[in-house]
Length: 241
Image (tube, rainbow, N blue to C red; front, side, top):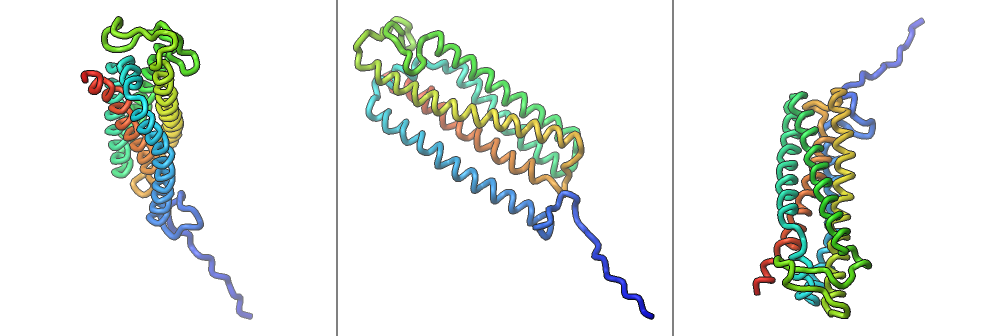
C-alpha cells in the first residue's frame, strides 16, 4: 500500500506580506500608488479653496490687503521654517528605515512629530490673537485697526472694507484650519510609525508605511508653502502701492 502525502507548499516572504500580493515590491508599489491617488484628490480639494481665494482677491483687493497686513508675518515665517525642517527629518526617517538604522529612524520620526506639534502650537497662538482682536468671521466689529501702522486705518461702521475683510478671514480660517486638520492627522500617523518602529516592525524590506506617510507629510508641507505667501506676503507687497 502506497501512502500519498499531499505536498505542503512552503511559505516564503516577509511576515508583513499580504496574501493578495506576490511579493513585497508589488505590495510597496500598490501602497505608493494608492497614496498618490489620494493626494490627487487632496490637490483638487485644496485647489477649490485656492480658486475661491483668487476670485475674491480680485474682487476685493483693498480689503484683502488690509486684512493680510494684520496677520503676524513673524509667526507665519517661523511656521514655514518649522515645516521645511520637518520635511527634512521625515525624509531622513525614510532613508534610515530603508537602510535598517533603527535608532536614527525613531529619532527622526520623533523630531518630525515635535516639529509638527510646534507648528500647531504656533497656529493656535495666531488663532487666539485673531480672537482677541475680534477678527473671527461673523464677529468682526468696527474699531479694529489694520495695516503695519496700528493707526493707519480704523474700521468704521458701514465701511465697505468690513465685508471684504470678513471674507478674507473666512477664507483664511477655512484654508489654514483645513491645513491644521491635516497636520493633526499627520501627527497621529507619525505616532503610529513611532510605536511600530520601536516594535521593530519596519526594516529595509518592509518600509512602505514610512514612505507613504512621508509622502502625505511632504504634501501637507507643500500646501503651507503656497498658503504662506498668498495669505501673509502678497498683502504687504500690494499694500506698498
